Length: 106
Image 1 (tube, one colour):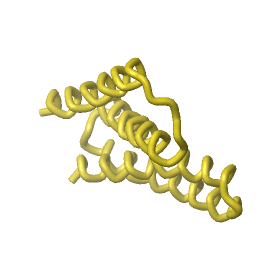
Image 2 (cartoon, helix red, strand yellow; image 1 turned 135 degrees about the vertical axis):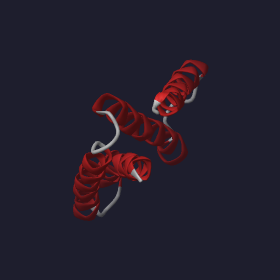
Image 3 (spheres, rainbow, N blue to C red; image 1 turned 90 degrees about the vertical axis):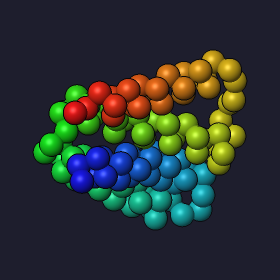
Image 4 (cartoon, one colour; image 1 turned 135 degrees about the horizontal axis):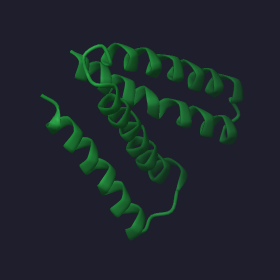
């Protein structure tokens, strides 16, 4: 169950930068800022639950990795963030690191 909590925490971690960006680019600043704050709180809560049985360093690295990968992908898809080989290689290293941490956990 802890890994499910960690996955949910990582997905919520994507929500707050998304909410902050939409608060800057849409006409609904307050709603998106509220979304960002709720995402931050939910992300922290689920990380806290996951850390009850997943080592802190592993949980934190996976949590931030999921957030970074999700924000990277949404930035490209929704906000036309730059796309180049170096960014994709860096993205791949993050994904490999997340998978490695998951596989290394007993």
